[in-house]
Image 1: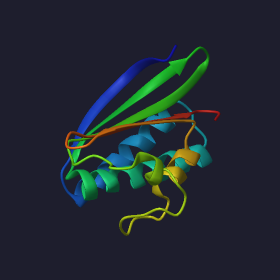
Image 2: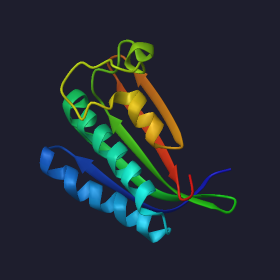
Image 3: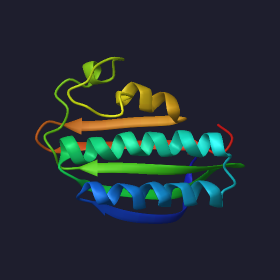
Length: 137
């Protein structure tokens, strides 16, 4: 069972909100003793997903929290938008699929950077993406 400790919520409405979010995610990683490689993977995944949130979802909320699972410590980041949703989630999860210009990772590349990845979407009601990067994962 995963339990949450520290938790913060940010509202993302414009490009200028991205850097403070990245910095906060890094702080959470540092706080749990996450190594630089895993911090970089987490920050890269966050960057891709927050840009999707802005571009496709029109902005939204991001929740960052420290989590534990037994002896393992991690950082969970949840991206919530009220955009149009993703029409074909299976297609969106395929390598090489893109509807625009982003970092080029897409959702499958982002999924590979983290230990846990979950996406929930409903047409007309938005998308929620949850990622967890474990300290030693």
